[in-house]
Image (cartoon, rainbow, N blue to C red; front, side, top):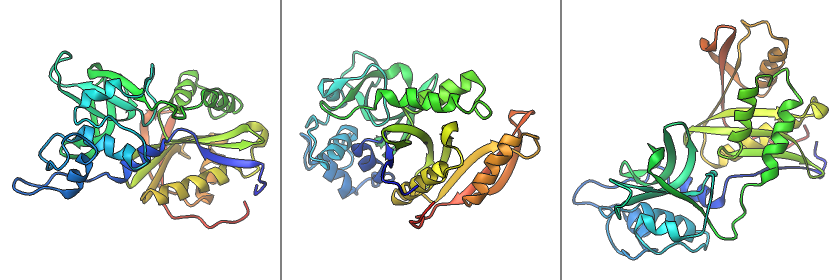
Amino acid sequence: MDDPQYNIESVNVPPWFAVARRETGIAQYPPGQSNPRITEYHEHTNIRGYDDKASWCSSFVNWCLARLDMPGTGSALARSWLEWGEPLAQPALGCIAVLYRDEPESWKGHVGFFLRADSESVYLLGGNQLGQVCENAYPRESVLGYRWPVGGVRPQGDIQAACEAILRSVPEWFGIEEALMQYVRDTATLPTFVMRHECRIIGFLTLREHFPQAWEIHCVAVHAEVRGQGVGKKLLMHVESWLAEHGARFLQVKTIAATSPNPHYALTRGFYERMGFAPVEVFPELWSPSNPCLQMLKIVSRPAVGRT
């Protein structure tokens, strides 16, 4: 599997999003004090020199882009981002989300980097969220638009089709149509890594971040034609190295517990055990009584490079 024709890549984690993630935890100081890091964020806007008591969500986005020599809006107004870049019909991980505050017609707004969404909320990583750089939820109806940098490499359309084909090749693990299609859609909004062989995608892994130090394997699958050839192991080792570089300490995964006599998930548990995961707890009814959930956990460390 050290064949140079095999290649692993992150397909949807834009570089500015990685910059923003590293700032997680930067927070405003108490009254009478000011965090100089937030004043630094303002350097790329029209409120240069202001302290951390001025609204700084737009300053944070401008600063993240400036770290990569990318142009921002130069404005401290969140709604200035509605005129920046190109619109996206559907959000993608790391795209810039612009929201209104108070009411749609107001000049007030908020801006941050899109993480994910559910039926009621959008989740953003941004500045001036609860007074700090963190993840926070906002009502979906408050979204005014999603933006992407002009010329920026967008998430590749072929990724979802390739991941769907992989999942359909292993129905023993992915036989529920609704769940399968949700996994496919999630590749557009969750950190996703793919392995290619001669340009063909043969395996993928998606991650979910719970906290900067705690992540979860959301989905991992290898095409049936190449199972047993070390693809999953190589993918997981690569992802662990990526997580270690981003400051993660814990990686969990959920799978079917041994109390369910399913031979296919016995193979899955064996794989994770060989990769250093330990069982933590069984949740008998988290999914359904016939599919008891086993939580497994591993301490993240940068894996040694070697043959797999």
